[in-house]
Structures are given as C-alpha cells and as structure tokens.
Length: 543
Image (cartoon, rainbow, N blue to C red; front, side, top):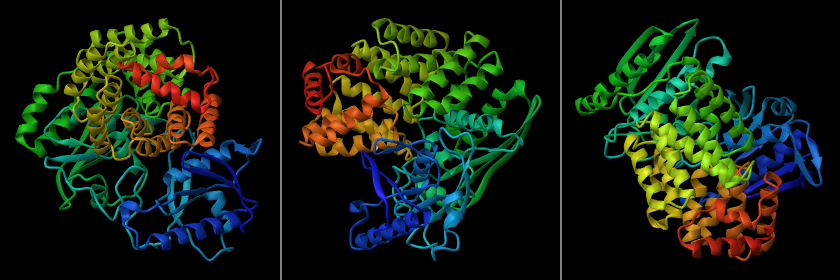
C-alpha cells in the first residue's frame, strides 16, 4: 500500500526498501500503531513488539538484496529504537519535515559499532512522550523495572570524554571499563556489565530511571580529561533509590599514576558500599599492570571489538594486541586477546583452520596465564581452548578459576555456559547464562547463541529457535549463529528457512562444511555432535 518491498529477511528481521522517505515513515507509523492496538489486551510478556530504523542513503543492489552503508546505518538505528517505536537518521528526518503530521524528537548523537562517526537520531513512539524512555534489546520493559537483588548492586556509566579530542573516547571508556572490572572482583555485590552500562553513553539520562532499567541501587558517573601527560578524573557515587550523593572526588594525576588512580577510585566506592567490601578490596587489589602505557592503550581500543564475534572486528583486535605485545612483551591481557581471536578464527573458518592454529591459541592462552595468574580473561580463554582440545574437565576447572577471579563478569559466565554445553551439562549451562544475562541486561548476540546451544542439546527446539534467531540478528557477521539457527529450523521441519540461514553462513565463511563441525563443536558426547551434523545435513550444509 505504501509502495515498499521486502528486500531480505534474516532471523526475525526484515529489510524493506521504499521509493521515498515519506512513504517509509508513513508505513512504519501505520505498522507500529497497529501493533500497539493489537497489544492492548495482551500481557507484556506475551506481546510482539517491533523496532524500526529508517535511513536515506545509497545502496548496492545484489540480486533482490540491498547492501552498503545506507543499509548498515538503518540496522544500527533499529538497534537504538525503542520496542514498538521508530528511530530516524537526520537525513531521513529532513526529508519528512513538514510533510507528515507526526513529529519526531531529537535524541542527539550516538556512537555505534563499526561506524567512524556518531549517528544523530530522531525518535517516535505511539505511546507519546509521557512514558519512560527506551530500554535496549534483552532488558525487561521500562514499565516493569528489574527487582533489586538481595545484595548491593551498582552500574558504572561510561565516563564522559572531556578532552576535546574524539580520538580519546576509547581512553575514557577504558577507565570506566577498568573500574567495572575492579568492582567485579567482589562477590559480595552485583556489578552490571559494560555492554549494558554503555547503552547510556552520550545520552542525558535520569539516574533513577537508569537504576530502574538495570535493577541496581547505586550508580557511578564521572568524566575524564586528558591533556599531554596529565589526566583529571572526576567521579561521584549516587544512591539512585534516594537520589543522595554518597561520595564524590576529583583526581589530578600524571599518567604514570593512572593505575593507582583507578585503584583509589574503586577503593572509595567500596568504602561507601560497606566496610566488608572495603576490606575485601584491599586484599584483592594486587594486580600486574603493563610496563608500557601505550600497550595498555592498544588493548583498551581492542576490547570493544570483542563483544560480538565478527571477522573484521576480531582481525582489528588482534592487530592492536600484537602492537601491544611489541611494546610490552609481558602484557598478559594482550596475549589473552590474541588467543581468543585465534580460537574464533579456527572455529568460524575465518582463516587457517589446521590443528596447529588451535594449538597456537592454546599455547598463547597458557602463556598469558603464566604471565599473570590473576588475569581472569587469560583463564577464560585457556578454558575455551581446553574445551576444543576435548579436555572438558580441565576446561571447566579453568573457567572456575576465571569466575573466582571475577565472579560478576558476564563474559566469563557466558563462556562457562558454552563449555558446560560441550561437557554435557546443559541444564547447568542454562543457569549460568541466566546469570550472565542478569549481569548484562544489554547482552551481546553470543549470549542467546550459547543459550540456544543448551536448548538445542536438550531438544527444546522452539526455545532454541527463538534464542538463535536473536543471536543471528544481533551478531549477523558470525557464521555459527546462522548455522545453529539452520540446524534447529531443520529439526522443526522448516527446510526453506533452514536453507536460507545456511546461505547466510556460507556468504560469511564459504569454506564451512559438515567435515568442519567436529572442529567447531567439541561435544564430549558423540551423540550430540551426530545430532547436530544430521540437522545441518538436512538443512543443506555441504559435505
């Protein structure tokens, strides 16, 4: 009716093309208003709600599909949209201004994955402006806030970059992430993961609303100003349930002192949360820091690239880690990053997939642990490598060490989930992924993927399909997400949908085949592997 066409579908997403921005927006509004009307009498947990992103830009037509930056920006806008709402790019808003009655509100600039410049977006929702703001994918609706846990809980918002240099954003982000990591060492309280805290980056937010959406009592916010060899860090801790400021401080330091500053901030926060945590912090605060701050910089830049498996992002993370090692050969974090990128390249067939590749990843992870036995990422990656070498009990033990070092780290819990599935402990794996999703309500696509693997192994196909569809949507550049969605769709008797997902996986990694599956999925029980291979064969994956 509005002149549009469906260009492509993948998982639960739809890509549509329109001859004009006005037609696209009118269609989107009609759909969202219609869905809102349908949902009135449906319980919130049973509603279907769409997110929509609209962009005007050049595209490349390939068959019936559309490719290019114009499509990529629309996809990023969709991720930033509210459930049931619409997000427009600035150029789309310019085209429709004065041509339709609906008014979109300016939501400012947002930094998004794989985009060099921030995207300014405009929002609309059929409920109007009187309701709470948006919640990102994977969270409870803003109208049903998460319940506070039975222990102290905190979210660290991304510190503002006040340096006047956009290139220094990664540095302020790294300060925030290091504080999150340090606080996560305390098993006495719950710390929200980076991915969830960072969804509020660059936005003017109501801290009480943030606390309701993330289910925490305390919120830490601050800023970083870096000039030459000096840095100024300000931080304040707020009890979001009352709005009271519990603690605030400003630090002016030489950059050589940056690790002492971070430890000092963490100690003050721990003191505000209770003497017991403060005592525990002093006991646990010993750590090995890189001898070269430039190496530390490289790993700060690499960290965000590891959140969702993507061939280009992982290659860039590896390059940065290699540069860090050239500057500081004994920096354990950099070796752990290289081991992780090597293992994912092996399992996803992004490069050389011989057993030598797996062995190299294992040796690198083991070296990282030897350099710093208190580095939780090194132990987690070592556990990963041990699982792929079919040493399942050792893998679980290594992950136990990682979780003991950082019990509130969502990535570690997610990794443990995957290892437990391969070890034949899928029920326990589901418990771990639930905890990971609670620690990181804005979880990456790998989390539902790991959850789906547990459901698939337990033959809970409908639940597995839902999880894998979400994973394929959130991490479209990861071929294994599409493969597993194809397998469960084959098991559910959906051959056409399964074949489409196989095609998506082969676009990313053309060398994928059934013979690679024993390398990609190191199940302890051969019956689990045979079941997966049978379903992928049925879906159309070549021998």
